[in-house]
Length: 376
Image 1 (cartoon, rainbow, N blue to C red):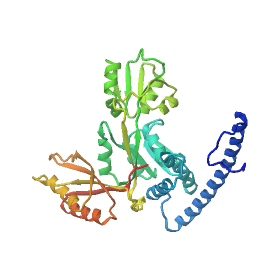
Image 2: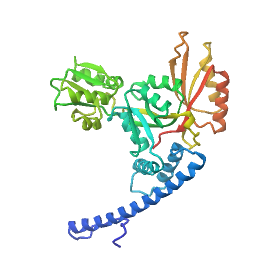
Image 3: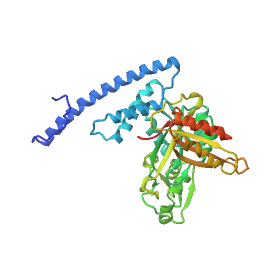
Image 4: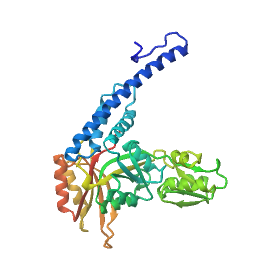
């Protein structure tokens, strides 16, 4: 039938242009059916929004959206690849969510940063983006609730944690509600198509560190200038031909730059993990999804065996620790704050018991958030 797509199309001996014309007609029909279904879904989302207004439920629930994507992936009959499902459904849910309320999301700007890309990957494109000049400003905007959410880098697979993000998480009234990771590819960008005449390479300090081997080998003696973001470096490169930037291809398009050399990072599988934060007063605790993380900041008295004692409750209650970082407590007493990620959710009995035992022995104990892991 002309209004149904075939399960498997076999070439039938007709001229190629006739077969293509037939297939394109069928695709057009399916596209119209998809559009009708998408609008039906959007109307249901609007109805959900009206119900939410009754009790003030939040528009965006990361745990709910993670469950929706899991269910769709598990029911996917193919041939669409499983990895393609999440981006498609995130955009669908983003468009439907914007009919309830358009979420304002702060991120490290300007436009063209990896933080912007992580924001779009997580929320979809139907948001009101707020590009901030620094990580501090992302936290300020979200703490002041001029942004509904903030997206900040937390660690890189090559260079480790982003210390400023950890410090601000400890100090701010924000909680982590989600995470996303991004394969980071740094490209050498400039106004001219070649390397001749480059006097400065401008980028975020993390990007400069991630590309130091390539820079030493290919641009020895060239000044490496740390700036607030890679996109800021791209903006500078767009104004001065002697400056090159380390940034994304999106930044190259944004600032009219040539991609002089692609993928100049020293590690091919260079990933950055970002966390999504919101004001704790605007947050409804997430339900467990089955693949959750609970993030903590703790401190203990400086005594022999104190760090060992932190780990005992985790072993006793069968809770896995997936990350353990230390930061100076800035007290001047050589004290440290430990940032710990646990596998699981406080609604699980064993996790709750482990948290209670930890709290009892800590001089500082703060749950930074419980949220679905980025498994999509």
